[in-house]
Amino acid sequence: MKNYTRSNEPTPATCPACGLLCDDLILNATAPISIKNGCAKSIAFFEQSFQTSIAESPSLFGKPCDLNTAISAAADILRKSKQPLFAGLGTEVQGMRALMRLAEKSNATLDHMHSESTVRNTLTMQNGGWLTTTLAEVKNRADVILAIGTDIVSSHPRFFEKVVWNTDSLFNKSTPAIIYLAVPAENTKAGITPNGTASTMIPAEAANIPEIVNALNALLINKKIQAEVVGGVAISALLAVVEKLKAAQYAVVVWSAGSLKFTHAELTIQSIVQLINKLNETSRAAGFPLNSGDGDTSINNTSTWLSGYPTRSRFVNGKPEYYTYHFSTQKQLKLCDALLWVSTFNPHVPPNTDTPTIVIGHPNTQLEHKSDVFIPVGIPGVDHTGLMFRVDSSITLPLKKLRDSHLPTLSDVINSIEALV
Ligand code: SF4
Image (cartoon, protein in one colour):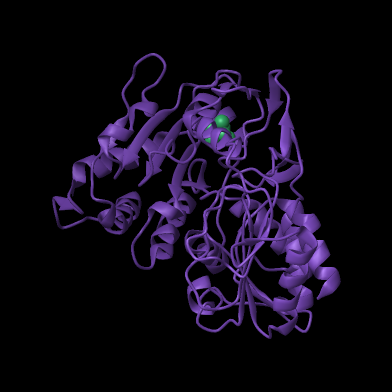
């Protein structure tokens, strides 16, 4: 039985496929899917969401069962567990609220699938604070954008179109100059201005970013560097970057913690923040950390306002605790006695484990190892409404329901489990 129906009319949609949450999409869901204002990433997201091979029913060890049976089985696992791990957590605000209530009741540890990246930013913020900005400020004020180790558009495809080249800004400002540091040249076409001005390229290996950012800091405070090249980049090129940042009226430094794949990347983010702080002594500058997706910004904000901590937190007898190192999925998989894996935007599968596993997620999830319990739920922004924080955490945007589906929402399922735990 086909378990959903959708309108054949073009429908306005908000796209949850990246942190920009573009709300100007017009979706035509009849095959082949077309989306006005959509980027390739949004088309891939909606195509995947509208696939017809979606799961029809929940299952126990791969055998189909009804929803109530699956919910009871999930509640049984959590009732017997002393130390459950809630991981993945790919959901929006309402789903996370429900998960937090269940976590409190079952003394669970919470960790998002992209925490490894998020934690690098959190550690920096906790260490000494930071000065970051919003998409609106980038649009209205930025005149120099320095992208470090990220082309921006791979993760946030319409960033330049919607924010940087958008002339509909509050103030009469010049077109921003774009500087790419340690970004492969083939990925930087988006940084060419609409009138054809090329961006400034500082080619470097990503592994050398820590050294290069430290050198930028040294040059900014007029330290003499006894070398002609740092991290493979000529000092003269770095000096030119420093001069551009100093001359800017509003410089914005963009990074993606997920792209800084080296040990102790939080120290490099601290170094970026130090650069921004120093620039603010004489002009205006701000940071713009990109998120990794799957609702990471939404679930960390929800967790923080409900418990005081972002994820990598745990409830013990109703009291929240927080430990970025010990409460990681990787560490907790060795200690937990039950795993609840949630991934509603994408069919991400849980990590391999012998622990009893409940998977609640995207209807097209293809489980290699049949989990104890699998419950397909609706996709937020497709099967049901929802609420998500934008990448800059400055606003939440409502997600729309685009089709009638028999699939329950994550919140419905979690609330039902909670009632039995
Ligand atoms: S830029 Fe992001 S939010 Fe906007 S349409 Fe593309 S994937 Fe969706």
